[in-house]
Image (cartoon, rainbow, N blue to C red; front, side, top):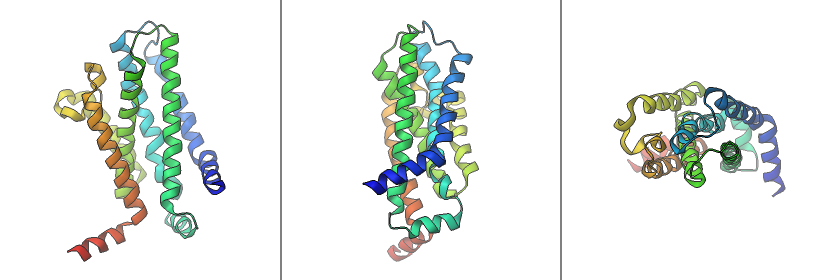
Length: 216
């Protein structure tokens, strides 16, 4: 247990903390772009969907950044603790940061006399953020390139903003249509993307190719 706590402390101090500060700044910028007082359900959903969903990019996309260098990755792999454990601890800490910031922001909306269903908006906002983060994790693992990892979820965000209904059940901003149905599809996709991304990162490209050859 002490080893897990030590891994978590190191990750938070040297890696997650700057992204937490960035996430907090995003939450502070949102009220400057849109008022957070006396909003109705749709207006509250708009500010959460358009701003708070980006917290997923802030917290989850850098999942593999600490071991971007191959030498560091090999060093971590040689340690007693499995890399899967390290990645799960990083993932859990990022998720906790997302949950806390989202809750604080919605509480601020309530303090501003905004009218909305707290549970609905909280769930929807978290899922949108998770999906964007899952996209980043998956493509980071696939290409081992942080620029691509950031680019893909941002492009999907822009696509959702422009395409709307054309994305069907994977429309990112469904709360703006007062619909939660799409969020369940996004939640399922998020879990798959994150699981595949972390698994691929832990197994390694060479091992995956070898497994495919053996099955063939």
